[in-house]
Amino acid sequence: MKRKRKSLGVQLILSFLATSIIPIIVLNLFSYYNISDIVIDNHKELMEYNLGRTKTALEISIGSYEDVLYQIYSNDEIIHLINRINQEEELVISKNQLRRTLRGYFYVKDYIKDIAIITENNTLVFYDSITGSTTRNSWISDYGVSQEALYDSYIGRKGTYFMPTKKAPNVQNGSHYLFHMVHQVVDFNKQNRQIGIVILTIDEKMLEDICTGGQEDLAAYNFIADKAGNLVSYQEKSLLGSAVPMVEAGKLQAYKAFAKEQGIFPRDGIFVDAIEVEKLGWEIINVSSQEETLGKIARQQRFTLLLLLGSLAVLAVIILYLIHRLTKSVKSVVNIMQSAREGRILDRVPISPQMPSEVEVIARQYNYTMDCLVESAEKEKELNRQRKDAEIMALEAQINPHFLYNTLDTINWIAIGKKEFDISRAITALARILRYGIDGSNGIVTIREEYEWLQQYLLLQQNRLKDQLESNISIPPEAMGVKVHKLLFQPFIENSFVHGFEGVKRKPVLNICMELIGHSLKVQIEDNGKGMPGHIVEAINQEQYLDAQDKNQIGMRNALYRIQLYYEGRAKICVESQEGVYTRITMVLPVDKAC
Image (cartoon, rainbow, N blue to C red):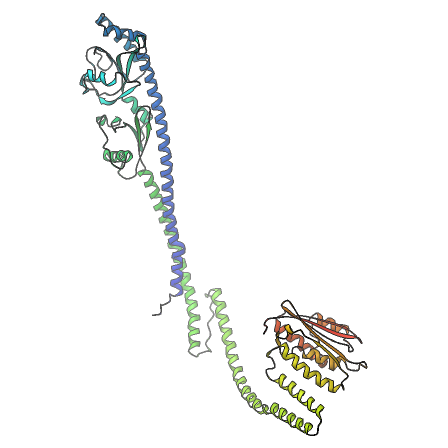
């Protein structure tokens, strides 16, 4: 079934949609997603920068508290007092002196809430700024681990260790969330004897300040968890110390799921990244939301899209109006063409000022073509009449060649009967020449066929000149199969006899030489006749085909014109002549086909 073609108007509208509206919508969507990707990439870079800065600040801050811890467990006076307590020498006095010494470290750094020492004999000495008591510690008694177990967990372990953040249970006024730094105390003067542990208790508010950077960011927040996923610092204090549920997809996905459950940000557009603080065994997690930023981008894209669609709507109205004008003009041309198909060839396309210039050109050209067609139809009628007359004349003329051949054949037999063999040979040669020239006069023949015709022609000329002619023909065997147009060289050879030898007293000489040079056939025809005037030689060499009214030049002019026509300007012809001495014609013809 043949598919129905769409009209010009439909094609233009579809083209408008394909080239304008659809690409703009696609470009707008591409721009939205591209901008979103850029924002997300920039956001990730900002998250990484934020995490790196927070990590640095945390390491510096924790390092300063480690310095305080170092000053405590390396203090000779404190080591001496711990030894005295372990030996129970003046126990009350030693504990009070140790407590006073510990109290002096509270003024070194902010956020220190408690400094406690558990000695080898399980004696607890502390100073607690939260309770302000020397007997009631804010966290140890209700930490969930006994004092002995706590001592055993850290004694003998090198380095500083961190205890998870928990709410201080023994506090009546307000809530305090504390984490702890633990280090063993070693007496290097007694063969590195381990004599106790020191616990530096720090308010979690210090970690919170580091995570927030001292300011509230409504679009992002940081929190800290240890390697097991326990919350070390978080804005919802009631969750401190609890563990973030891990998932198979990994920690980041677990933190992301945790952040979604908290509901601080919308569930969509949440980004989570983390950085490990190797020295502390913690991870800083950054949670941020791009919902608002992406929403702004989406609103901007929608506004841009609506603006573009509005502009396209106005443009579409203008285009539809122009298409209507164009299709109306085209239809008027098509209707007239259809009427011509139905035989009304005298109908013409009306030209109107509203018609587009291109359609007007088509309409005017169509009208002109139809005028020419009508005129041509009239001429064809006249030609048909003349063709009929010519056919009748051709039928009448068909007898003439046959009559001529039959007459020559009769004369030939009469000559043979009278033993006039020279006359018989001349008549036979003439008959062959006439038959060769008449049968397919514009056909393609080989050099061999031309050579055979030339033999007959020179035979007649020998008889006419009473055997005074000297002719030399040089054609190599490989050139015999080259194809040329029939009688291509005849006018030049005939010109030698008709004009070249006319009035010359010396013996006429005609030299014909042909040779193959690459893909070309070189032909030279030379006679020792009376030559040609210089202006004629110059005219021929400049391809000026002489005067058509000069009957003596018609043969030469037609021959030159035929050669250029046959070979489309690829043939080269050069004429050399000296009056009273010679004429030489050199032709170089392209070889198109060979036998």
